[in-house]
Length: 148
Image (cartoon, rainbow, N blue to C red):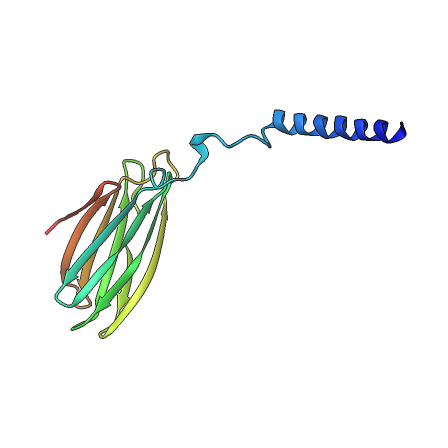
């Protein structure tokens, strides 16, 4: 009889703890709005070739920031990649990444806009190291358009 009493107490305690955790939401599945999907954080690919040189990568659009990754490849002269993010509430300074002749340089650029909605546009440019602009694009979460 003592075994049945202990077993009943354990079952009751287990049921009580499970009920409390369920009431707190610990045992329930997360709401759909909290799941991270590619729709939550759109990714825009960009590719700006110039001869055999290339600036390519992607922009991940988060709620209040952008994450830009990629590489710049310099073949005939050094090349500089330039990035600037903007929205009605924020404008960043130009960020640059330079690859010397015959090299490819990877990069990561993170910019934050501390206003709801974050950035709406990213300007991407490829320049040679003599200060001559070669290719330009304007990117949004829906894609990129050449400015040349």
